[in-house]
Amino acid sequence: MLRLVPQRRFPAGFRHGYAVGALGALAFLAYSLLGLVKFATLRTGIYDLVIFDQGIRGYANFELPMSYAKGNWQELGSAFSLLGDHFSPILVLLAPLYWIHDGPETLIVVQAALFALAVLPLWVYVRRQLGAEAAYLLGTAYALSWPVAEAVNFHFHEYAFVPLLTGILFERLQAGHRGHALAAAAALLLVKEDLGIFVAGLGVGLLFISRWRRIGTLMVVGGAGFLLLASHVIIPASGGDPDRYWYFNGWGRTPGEAIERIVTRPQEVLSVLATPDTKVWTILLLFAPLLFLPLLSPYALAPVALLAERMLATDPGAAGWWGTRYHYNAAIIMALFCAAVDGATRLRRMIKGRRVRQFTRSWAAVTAIVTLGIMPFFALGDLLKPSWYQAGPRFAMATEAMRRVPDGVLVEAANALGPNISARAKVVAWAAKTAERPARAPWILADLRDRQPHFDSLQDQVADVERLRRRGYREVFARDGYVVLCDPSSVYQLAQDKLCPK
Image (cartoon, rainbow, N blue to C red; front, side):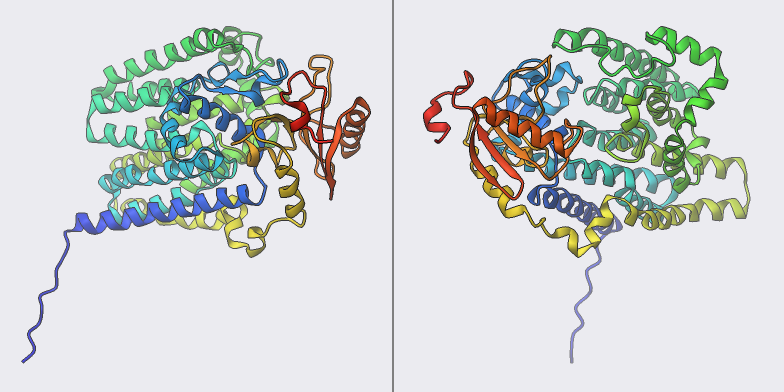
């Protein structure tokens, strides 16, 4: 007679742990694949991957986070502290990883891990409010969301820390742990100075919840105070300009003037928020998949405050803030998800009835479906295209051109090639001579067929290479549009005869 072996049953907590871990692991693999394939096929860029690579290498060497790519605009061969650009001391946590692998690939993988780990606190947060089914649906929706995809597509940025810390912050608020919530808010302030706006906005929202008013007051004071301290004391002390990113001249020349005009002329606020219409589309793409439920929660004041900072900018230099590209929207997407869950819960409490209960149970599925439908139109959709994994036809010549650049030299590099030699050379952006910066790097790695950020046309790029040749630069390599030049007389070059072949 066969004896049946009793089936072992794991507790629900273990099953959920494995399932949520699998969801996070899949997200990590997708993000890593997206970033590493772009890097391997020469589709990343100096801004901002090389800048962060150079800065974190400084931390790894127990030095300040200095970037040649940033400093080159002040003086050839000089390095500029990232703390003078944005106050992001949390990046020092990445330094030990550079002892394992020193190169931009580390940043790509770390960013993928940080975005993927954010699924875990979000799942816990949603499960408490709406149940496990909704938690899986919204966890999947976050993982596939276009703000995360576009941030991953931008190679690396300090905002990679924000979704994870934001998820922890809201989960700790939900659990009632005041100290933990304040610690998470403080950690957010170390990501970037403008997160002070986010923390202050959340503090204002908490003022509407009686048991959280004291914590809300601390967040308002702490967030606003930190923003002023970082922008007007720490960044200038590190060599930066507090007005470097002031794109609000349409409102005034100072923060005080801008705030006064925004408060006293609300009709102009609506006009600025709708001009150009790129802003409107971005706002709709952020809120519509969540069925605008974040607007029912006081938590929404945190992401809305940070979003308003970008959308109220008036200067053309802020155009990158307004659209769906780059990393900016990744800073608020987790907060929008958490506010939507809170909004759905409040709706269920306000309007009691079977239809409302059914709505709040099913909206998570709608959000997941909409997010899945949008996904192919953004960066993660590239993973579904077989042709995307193939390198371009000039890949072999690009690789050979990069090989001709010696280790340790200062090199002006074409935008797509700079990241792939950043681990072994001092990379700056290839740019023509200007009155402010007449000196040129001793090595030039040029691409005459791909339009570069600091030239107006391909013709200007060809003309720059010809000027350098007439100036005495030697041609080390020239094929398929790639040109490597070396200046044997450069005062910045050591062992010139060895490093600059005849």
